[in-house]
Length: 215
Image 1: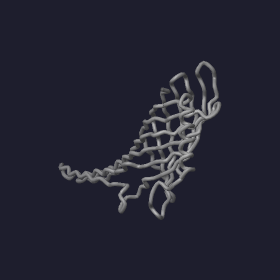
Image 2: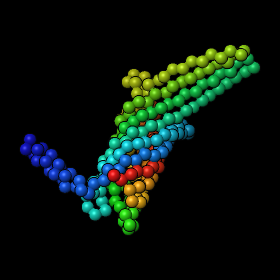
Image 3: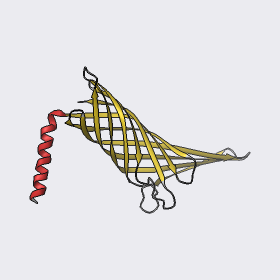
Image 4: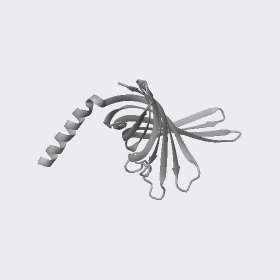
């Protein structure tokens, strides 16, 4: 117990000592993800955005660690149709995914002078899925009449869902800081299977382009 208390106090003193050299970075940007399942040639693209903040703590000259919390939104749509002289059938499914990402990135900066620097970052990203649902809309047109229907599928459902709620990514990227404005490009690749299907393995990589403000 004494060792735990000493460890907690040491960590607290360390954070207090580094607060004067810390940055709060709030940012948002475009997010693109691509999934590929083993045994299939096609990839599934997702488009969306992220928003959140990180706390960049300076360790030694040029080196810092940046834990953060970000919300991700991704969406993907597919459609199919068939028809004849008397009837037309149309089906479209849209998947929307909301998740929380907790990145812990090491960052190394190279000063350029005049409050400018370039930097590289790398580290793990822990993901917790909050919502992953597919809305299926179908319609049948027959002799001038249209019949429509829609249903929602919870992909995180413990019995019938296929998506994995928890994931870990490993990634990195580069950035440019001009005063209080930061531009960055990052890439993450999953370490765990995205789906829970036993006979298949699905991988995902994510590309993000964003801007942050240094407070």
